[in-house]
Each structure stands twice: as structure tokens, then as C-alpha cells.
Image (cartoon, rainbow, N blue to C red; front, side):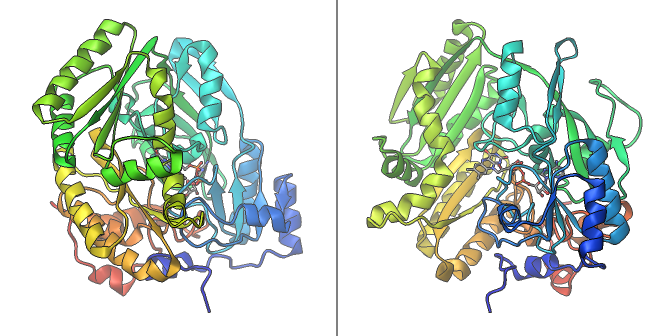
Length: 499
Ligand SMILES: Cc1cc2nc3c(=O)[nH]c(=O)nc-3n(C[C@H](O)[C@H](O)[C@H](O)COP(=O)(O)OP(=O)(O)OC[C@H]3O[C@@H](n4cnc5c(N)ncnc54)[C@H](O)[C@@H]3O)c2cc1C
């Protein structure tokens, strides 16, 4: 029998099954949930729509989907679920890649999409945002005020989801990740209380940093209903460039040297390896030379500043043997290429089908390791070698200046075992180099075994004690990030973390 819990990792599969519902979601419970929250659906369509994310992990249908429209409604819902020991799985836009918003243990999905609203406080440099507002909606609301939200993932997630995964993307070099751009949050805790994580001011020194605790908690400690985000002024001008190299190492060396020069107008610095370019050409009908390529964008208020930074970058690129480059004085000329870069994941889905002439789409595994920038070129080269040995296409796109890269692997079910072996090697190498198993996508169920390898059991035990203290009935998103009880395999897993 195929398990609906099939994931890349048997341990994670077992943990995702953590029994959570002590009482069934019967008619009586449904009536009570509907008293707490007006919109609770058990229709087949609603359950199906909330049964997966955009990753390749197993889907699972929840027992109900609740869609609160206010913090008070979300709190009443959680209180009722806590009383009845019903699992609550927060869900944002469902663009996650690690199965984080999937109700593998059943229960109620807490759909945050109706938590809306954007209030701008320009004088304070912040905006209050409903957790369900999506990145592009937030930016559209901020634009008339001359602002934007700094972090820019290739997807269009909810701001609550970004906070919960520590999401980032194409602009981290200049603006930081969501962890640096979310100042305060309103959270419904696992017992249904409502707390603000910290004051909305820039500086606060009043105890433990609860904001940091909830950033990256992946819905395991509560539902975020509202966020206060830092406003970033819109730049007046942008320009961009594409720079090609014979090998990834030369591109990596150029980026390391350029970032050390503190080029303040450099916003985006992305790498695609030759196979990534090949995918782009096949799927997006571009005609780019198949070489490791850097895509750059500079932003500022004056052209001179940006052009000076580009000149400095180009000098390092030439010194490191770049083969060719194209400069676009007006950054908008490069928008099509940025669209193609954002489309890497969807491109990888269609790549082998288009090559074979079948047009079939495949599942795609997405790696997300992050290493110290000085180790990035070496890590990518080792990864490319491992891919070749395993005979998988090696599509790599990297937020290279951050040391974070994604390998996108199209695969068929019959290739899963080979894929897991490859994933073990790629992530193992990154951890050995002082890196992390996930730079921005989070743990969900997909990366659980690797965080033990990365942090060691003593560290994971601290995380587990926090979870158990704040959610003693294991109500909130059970089975995600860490197991409730450590398994024997977990205890036996070798620790690679450096002390
Ligand atoms: C094509 C593509 C490109 C991508 N590119 C990037 C990228 O460049 N950078 C990047 O960081 N990510 C990227 N991602 C991954 C994904 O978009 C992020 O992980 C995103 O932050 C998830 O947000 P979401 O709203 O979709 O959350 P969901 O997928 O709905 O949920 C993700 C996790 O957050 C929890 N959660 C969601 N909302 C809340 C809430 N309000 N309160 C508490 N917990 C909550 C869920 O329980 C779950 O554990 C990409 C994904 C795709 C498909």
C-alpha cells in the first residue's frame, strides 16, 4: 500500500504521523468550531485545496479548513481545538516546499488568507499587515507611499508564511531576510491566548526576544495573525548586467571579492550554472550562452553611484576571466531574464518533458543549502560532480552572494531512492563546510533528519523543550521541524555541528 505520508525520509514520515487528535472531529466538535469561527468547511474541494503545498512531499487531507477573518476568531478557534485536543495546522499561501502546511496528522487547517489589511505608518517606517496578505499585494499597497517590502522571494507567499519560514530570496544582500524585516507580530498561542511579540519600535530591550522565537517557527508555536514590517524606500533608478564565466569557481571568486568591496547599490546577485541556463533556454525560449552566468541588479537614487559599483564589479569579473558580459542601463530591460530566473522551479518541472518531446511535467526536488560565501564555489562544484555520478540533471540557481543555492532535480517516483542518496550527500557536504541544510525554505517534514545532523542532539533537545513548554498538548502543527519524542535513529545519528 502506498502511504499518504511517503516522504523523502522514513523518520520524518513516522514523526508526521504523531497521533494528535485525542477526540474525533465529530458533529459536536464541528458545531463548536463553527461557533468559534464562522468559516469552517469540510467540503471535499476545500479539503483538497488545503491538502498540499508546492513541494514534492506527500499530500494529506485535513478534517476541516477554518478561515478566521480576525485575530479574535483565530484565538477562539485555537482555544476550542486546544480544549478538544484537535491539531491546528496554520496555512499561508501554500507555496512552501517542505510540507510545512500539510496536515499529516489530520485536524484543522487554519487558513490565514482572510487575515487582511495593510496600514502604513510612514513616519515610523513601518506597516501593519494581515498575515494572509501576499508579497505582491503588500508591495502594491506600499508603492503609492514610496515604499516596498525588502525581502523578495521568487514565489508569491503570504507575509505570515514568510515570517514562519524565515523566507528571503533575491534581495537579501541589500535588505536582509524576513527575519530582519519583521519587527513585531501578533500571535495566537497554542492555548488560544493572544500576544504581541515585542513593541513596534526599532529598539527594545525588555526580556527574551519572542519575535525571534516565532520567526521560523513554521506554525509549531502558534498562528501569526498580524505583522509589523519595516518599510524600505523605493529606489529611483535601477540598472543591471549579465556576466558569463567559464566555471562556477571564477564567478564565485568575483562575487566574494565584489561583496567585500561593500557595493552598496548591488541589490541582486544571482548565479545560474550552465545546466540552469540550458533549462531556461529550453523552457523560456531564450537564447543565452550555456555558461555559468551571474545576473546582477543595482538600485539607487543616482545613476553615477550605480555605474561606479558596476564598473568596480566588472573589473573583478574581468580579472577573474569572465568570458562576456551585457550591461543594461535601464534595469527594466532585464525584467524578462528575472522572470526566467524566478521561473527556475517551474522550468525544471517541464525540462525533461520538453527535451523528450512528451511535454510531461515532473516532480522537482528543491535543495536549499547555504554555506559561507567563501565555500560556495567549492560546494557547487562538489554538488555538480555528485549529480553527474548519480546521472541527474544538475540545475542550480543560487542567491550566490548569500552562499545559498538551490539544486532543482526533476524526478520520477522510481528514482526516489537515488534522489535521497544524492540529497544526503549534497546536504552532508554543505554541513561539513560549516553550512546549513536550509537557507530559506524551512524544515517542514523534508529536512528533519538533516537539522539533527547540523545542530546535534543537545541543540535539538533545547528546541524540543521549548515546543513542549509552549504547546504541552502538541496541538500546533504536530510533527513539523522536530519530533515530539526523539527516535532511536535520531539519537544514533552522528553529529556534525562544530562547537
Ligand atoms: C516557485 C517557487 C519559488 C520559491 N522561491 C522562494 C524564494 O526565493 N525564497 C524563499 O524564501 N522561499 C521561496 N519559495 C518557498 C516558499 O514560497 C516560502 O517558503 C514561503 O515563505 C512560504 O509562505 P506561504 O505563505 O506559502 O506558506 P505555506 O506554504 O502556507 O506555509 C509554510 C509554513 O509556514 C507556516 N505558516 C504559514 N502561515 C502562517 C501563519 N500565519 N502563522 C503561523 N504559521 C504559518 C505553515 O504552517 C508552514 O509550516 C519558493 C517556492 C516556490 C514554489
